[in-house]
Picture 1: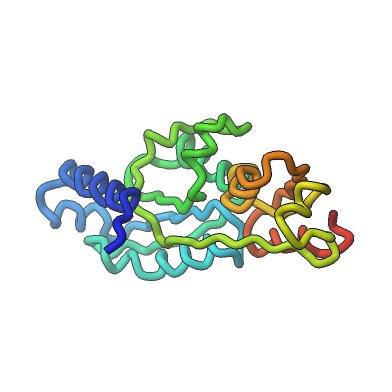
Picture 2: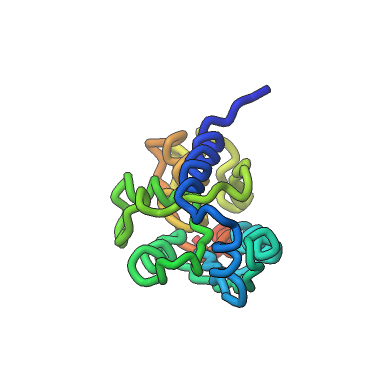
Length: 199
């Protein structure tokens, strides 16, 4: 069986964090009963993160003692950094706000991406909603059909940021390539970079 150390680490961290919760489930239920949890999604509507975050939000309230109402709110911008900044600096720290941030959020901080006003190490990470196998496609009109083609001419790609998985993997695969990254607020829009005339 293939092991996934990252997911194992997330589960362990969650279990260790659970030791700090109130001893009685009744205390948690009393806290959440009648309350609303705001679930902030760091991307625009219709993309991958939005879809599975909304699916998660629809059912998570049934699994929290006290069955709070969960309300989603999209806060797109900078590959979810806008939502991460808000969560870190402004959001209430009382258990009534959770967020779906990009999988590259810690990487953004490590790479020193602009606009970061959070410390990813201080978030209480709950887990990973999905394991994604990223793909990348280009328009036939781009004239790029192989990796070698991409090394010889500028390639325009759509991504939510420089550290988003498709763009960061491409940059590692083709360090000599001239890559033009078109920033979009979510996956539902990144394909627009492949439309002829958008480059």
